[in-house]
Image (tube, rainbow, N blue to C red; front, side):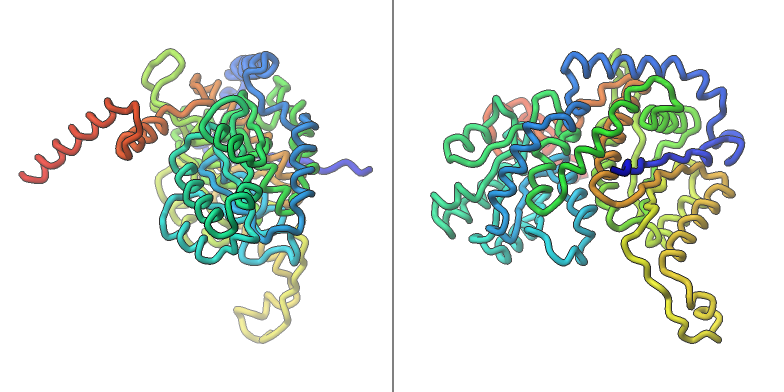
Length: 468
């Protein structure tokens, strides 16, 4: 069997001798941080070996993969929609996998086992319209929350499950729900057991935004026809390299160090992921959550205030050449651009030789849309480089399951290593937790009296200021 191609990383245009002194990396920058890079690999590797970090082992968990495949086979042909109730890491990965494998919306593969609908917000407009338009008899519901108590997901669940029960009856409704949550604790676990839902576990040592290769992402993906075996094979194919201590042999380690140095040494505190593929564009939003929620921290491990983290934004090529590129070319020099591109497209579309005497059409006739697309990316890359704007490229052999699996594992290791360079905990999210606690207090959840007092004081202060 022919070996699958691997994602390539071209960081030539991150170098100071290409984009200019003070704008890019020098050999001295990298050499000075080689000991830190080796130490980062050792620390993350030790945590993996102790079982504290579970994401690198997920591609090799054959039992979990088989369990998901059995369930997906049993549901094949029974439902038209797979409705995912989740938010953040419980939703973004499934959406990215579906788009890459089945095509971006609204134009999809001609035939998929079911259509994915991801409700990752509690905007009443979205949920209301979904329930208006979905057929409850042909809808399989996946409720996904590792904690089993996320307010947004649990509110969605209460509404959707009540809708199902009223439309198809209590017994059938329970057969149309699967839950993905912690295997040992949480309200969703208890509800799923009492109602008789199909139940899938998120390993305790895998955090929410690192959980796409658990049933969190695998279950919805398998139900809509994604080849999850190829996905896991791709992810597993890069794990060994991701644990190597040399920058030259470890894409995840090198890219983490590059972004860290560009941020902390050269002021590039915004990473723009410029995605030249509609199929990969949703993956950029999955990556954005992984990178920003993991690395945006007020304090380091010694509890010093550091306010670190690199903002990540998503751009779509060539669409955003006509919007964001102006800012990236001539705006503040605080950005590094990471291009994502695909070597091979399943379509080759020739441009007809119509209106050959017109200046704006004559040169296009006889060429292909593929040539135009590649030229647009190359021209944008060159323009940024000549303007002294550092940029790099991740080149996917295809927008398929194997390559997406590679990318997801590389990104998770990259994020873990970046956390070591910043000396922060990349696996918690204290800033997000405060917002959750205040929301619980506003809605009357027990045990949040201190937060209710804070809210009352804030409202009093605001009212006084408005009277001035």
